[in-house]
Image 1 (tube, protein in one colour):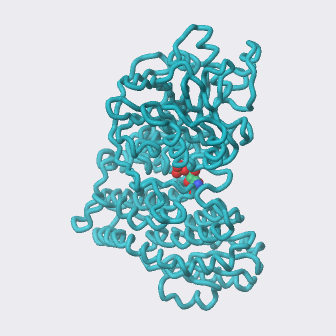
Image 2 (image 1 turned 120 degrees about the vertical axis):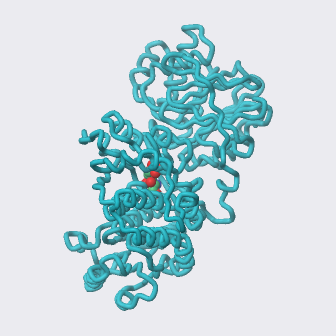
Image 3 (image 1 turned 90 degrees about the vertical axis):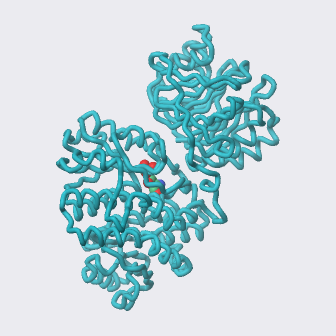
Length: 617
Ligand code: M6R
C-alpha cells in the first residue's frame, strides 16, 4: 500500500505532486519519488525516506519544470526501502515510467521470461517487471501506450493502481486499477487531470472525480475526454463523474500538532455527524436506508457475522455485545484475514457486516467476496465515501467521521460503535426485543454522548501528567470487562502502534489465568472500572494487582471513591448506560497513548512499519 499522484495539464506538475504526496503519506512513508516530463526528457528523483527528503533531494538533482508528472510514496512490499527500489521505475528503453500501488503476485515468472528476452533490472521490485512487460508488449505488438498497458495487465495476477507515461507523449497518462484505489480528478473543460490514491491531493483544484472500478483502464489526455475501458475484454465504459463533498479544511491539521490529536478532539462532532439525520429522538425514530430497505434480511438472519481488522475489529467486538444485548440476534466476530482462509460455514441466512474505516482493506474485501459467493447478505460500515468496500457491499451505512489521516484510528472507532449501536437499536425495536421506554432511554442517552466526550477531552492535561510518569515503562497491561473488554484491546493497540511499547489487552477476569504472573512494580495496568460494568468484580481485580505491586491507572466514573483509594491514578469519565460506555472510556486511552508517544518522540501520525490502509495481504 502506497500513495500515488499524477498530473497532466497546464500548471507546473511538481508542486501539485509534492503536496499531494504529503497528503498521501499516511498510506506509506518509507521512500518516495517523482518523475517529470520536461521538454521530452524524463527528470527522475527518488529517495529512501519521506516526501520532505524527496523535496530536499529533487531541488538539487533535477529541473522542476514540466506540466506532466507522477509521484509515489511507498510502503515496501517487494524489496527493502532504499533509493533504487523507490518508485517511479523506468523501462529499459528509458521511454516509459510507472508508479504502482499494490503487488504483482506473478512477477517472478514474468521477470524470468523478460530476462530471457534480454531485459535487465536494477531494483528488486515487482513494479520494474511490470513497466518492462508493458514495454515488451508495446514494442512487439506495435501498440499505442494505452493498448499496451491493457494487454500487459491481462498477463498480470495481483493488485494494482498504476499510472504510466511515455516520454514521447507529452500530454498523456494511462492509469489502471485492480484491487487498489484510484481517483481521477477532472479539471474544467478537460484542460487538466489529476490521478491519486484518494481525492485529497486534488481537492483544491476540482470537485469532479471519477473513481476507477477494478479491471478498468483510463487513457487521460490533456484537452480530451477521458476514455475508460475494461482490461479483460477492451469494452468501453462510460465515465461516471461524481461531485465530491470533501473540503480542504477537513484534511488539514487545523492548529493541532498532529492529525491524531485533531481527530481525537473531533470526536464530539464526528459522533454527532454519525447520528445526525438518522436518530430522531423526539419522534423515537431511527432512519437508515440501508437497514430499512433490507429489514427482512436482518430480522430473518440466523446470525450476524462481523468481519474486520485492527481497530475496526475491536469496534465489531463492542457491536457483538451491543447487538446481543439489545436485539438478541446471535453475533460472531471474525478477523477478516482468518475468516477468508478458514473455510467458514456461511449460509444465505447469514448477514455479514464488514467494518472498515478506509473501505479498502484487502483482507476485509476478500472476506466480503467469500461471504457473497456463499449467498450471504453483506452490509458495509465504512468511513470513506465511495470506497471499494462501500461499493462492493449489498447495502451499508457510512460513519460520516470525516477524513481520518492519522494512522492510528480514533474517531473511526467511536463512530463505528455509534452507527452499529443505531443499527442494533433499530433491529431491537423492529423485533420487539426492547421495551418502548428502554428504546427511548437509549436514544436520549446516545444523544448526550458528544457532550460527555467533550467532558472526557477536558482530562487532557491530567492524562499528560500520567503519561510523564509511565512513558518509559517497557510493558503495559490493559484490562476491561464486558462492553469494555474490547476497549482494553483497543487501548493496548493504540499504545503499541504509536509508542512501540509492548501492551496487552485482556478481559479483567482472565488476568488470574496467566497475565497476573507479569505483574510487579514495573507493570502499569490500565483498568476500566466504571460503575455499571461489574464494578465490584473489577475492584477485586484491582486489589489483586495492588497486592502484587502493579501500578494502577483506573478509568472510573465521576465521584468514584473505592477505586481512588487503591489506584495510583484515576481518570474520571461521566456516567452513561453500560453499553454506551466504550464511547467514553476509550477517549482517555487514546489520549494516554498519544501523549506517551509524543514524549517518546515517536512519529505519531506515521508510526514505523505501518500504513493507514492495508490494501495488501
Ligand atoms: O481501514 P480499516 O478500518 O479496514 O483498517 C483496519 C486496520 O488496518 C486499522 O484499524 C489499523 O489497525 C489501525 N492502524 C489501528 O489504529
